Amino acid sequence: DGKGGGGEGGAAAALLRAVFGPTGSGLDSTEDLDRLRLAFRHYDADKSGALGRGEFRSAMLDSGMHPHPFECDALFTEADLDHSAAVSFDEFVRLVLRYRARQGPLERLPERGAH
Image (tube, rainbow, N blue to C red):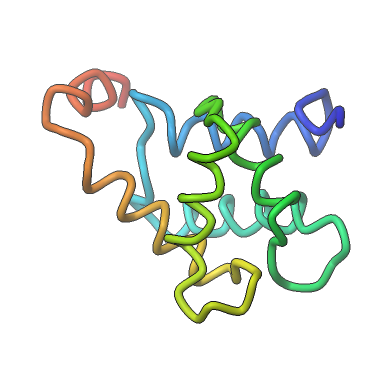
């Protein structure tokens, strides 16, 4: 859908790749949280304050994860803690934190050298 292009969309995609990617920094500061909020707002195309399945899938694809449709559905279900059929910003942040916690120490080594 072109959201991974230049400008704001490119910045949102780059942020999600930085957070979810193998050398991503996760959420280490208030600035990271603010940047994640900007990316979330970008993918919230209908400005509802939550990501529907299509918006969530766009965010996951732009993150560099490239999940299969069934994996994206599983991530969406995992993220949608209140079963509202949408992922709020808080739910999205919790998903990011859970994802980062699952990464092993070897996956995180390169990011420490980048700072």
